[in-house]
Image 1 (cartoon, helix red, strand yellow):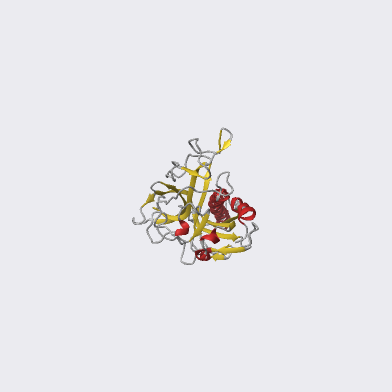
Image 2 (cartoon, one colour):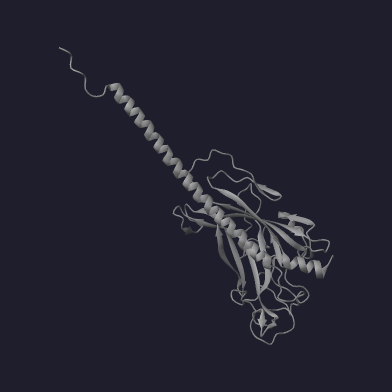
Length: 337
């Protein structure tokens, strides 16, 4: 009589089955974790790209308007105007006199004569190893009277007189098909400032326990009580500008001025700016991903920046802007100094 055949799996077969199942489960978990990391990274990258493209487009749009003074090639600024910005250095101020209009463009590490002015509390620096972020000032005339500087200019209400007196009230490009000479005055400031959030991402005072400082680009609009600062783009870490100056009077840049070198520029030299290279560094929210790679060196024109290893995605966005209003006036009217 034959022995009865054994039924079921042996112990070795069970162990092999468990081993194969463990390997499959480990593979699935690894795949899931990697997919989750890739998703969060791509989400952060998308956020950085959206912020960077918006910021460069927004700033470039305003830079192109700098130095536009209505229909007049050579604007005549009636009377004088001193803005509520006495704590700012002379080139950064938005006021003017009859002899010379306001500077169309200006940039520097800080426009303040002393720390604590309302426009920019202090010169902002992302890290001790980074270049100083710059502040940018722009001035121009606008056909729209809404959203302009709520200030009194000479005796023309809140309009900028650019030629002979206009008997038609209000600002705008045309009045009965006749070019106006009263325009809305735009005096804007852009600067990176720090705001503070808690672990839940809510805005808190920077002196609060557990508060984390994060940067954001702010725009200041000149009004009767000074500059009204509004947040434009959170996550903007650095703003860097390099100016092309026209020293020959042909409307083309022949000298490049970058970063801290702008401090030495005179008012006359600032009026020679005809182009600008704009650089913006944007950071993401911290990622829960181990960072085992060295931080890349970010090039911002003539300066470089090595960001800290803080599990954030960073990208540099840049664009070149021709200051058309200044370039054509420089090339066709003012000529060489």
